[in-house]
Length: 199
Image (cartoon, rainbow, N blue to C red):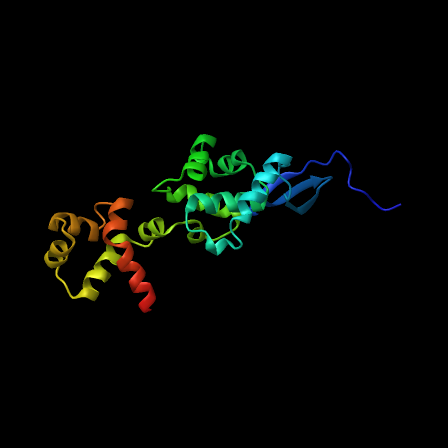
């Protein structure tokens, strides 16, 4: 008869090596054993929720068509078969906070939360972010300075061209003052899109 590990053997977590991937360790009668563990299951999505997911995901034939972070989060959550509570728990935030991210949308998505959510969805964090949040993540100051330099303008000339104070422009370029989404849309969104097309 093949030797079997006693049923009462206790396994303990040795290390976490990825999203839902762990190494377990057990010491049975002086013999140390290790084993991989990958968790592949989450709570079953209720049928009506599954129908909601299908309807929503039919709006987008491909993930690359989705521009808003709120829609990206919802699309990826449905692909994984997760509940909003599952994502919130993984990211270490209240469910109501996550619901706000997904259902109502936000201007600013905290980077630390988005990093965790991207890890759960197994995608690069940049894939989750809309253009405004990418603008902040990639350094607003350098991008504004690059636009101004490309136009061959001094800070004063650029501020005058935009119709903003020189002080505000300096603060934006030095990352001392974060730009609101409405300001970004009004002054920089189009310029950045033009820069992308030229490349």
